Length: 285
Image (cartoon, rainbow, N blue to C red; front, side, top):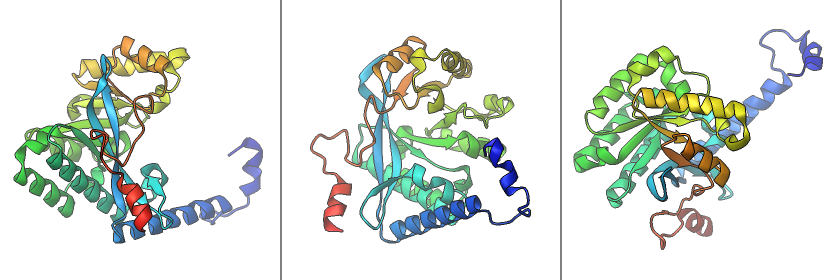
């Protein structure tokens, strides 16, 4: 809130539904309704974005499977538009389950790729999520070696001890773990050496324009040094220009992800002739 606006709400009682709170609440309710409808009508899919090795950017090291829903007009809605509203709700658990189930099916169909899937620490121990993972690994135990689970800093730090036990169990089955949005401000560094994440994904706020931003250069080098100290692969998110990609590669970042290498697409990017399920659903919806 701007300094000059402070007095505007000075006489509003604590807990009063201010216009701002009302707008946020209305937006969140709309997001919850949209996601619930998409799940009910099975209008949920993954969009895939490549993650490349910095020293060999021509071939993806793996893909991130990003959850998408279709609204009632057939538009593809990215997770950033609704994930905050559903994160702490039952819909958040359903979204995590659907992402995992679709990811496992993709890995089963495409034995030549690795895939990362996002999840919340709130889904650890959630019955359907656990059943889905066990069923997928039972059908094909090699899927675990190609599955990467991404957990955000904020989510991991809510229940760090639970996350540690969860990771130790699944890492024994070959599953890789990535700490997403690293550096965004939530991690207690005293926990970092105990987590044993396999990779960290450096938050995009440090990456955009890093080639000519001295402050972000210092911070990015520090985050890369932390990753190296703990034997974690470093991934830079939101790489959007050739200049940023070159600076990151020269400064020791292991992998790069962003629009410079490819936007998320619901069409399988590893197959040139793959149909786009979002286009098909829009035509038949």
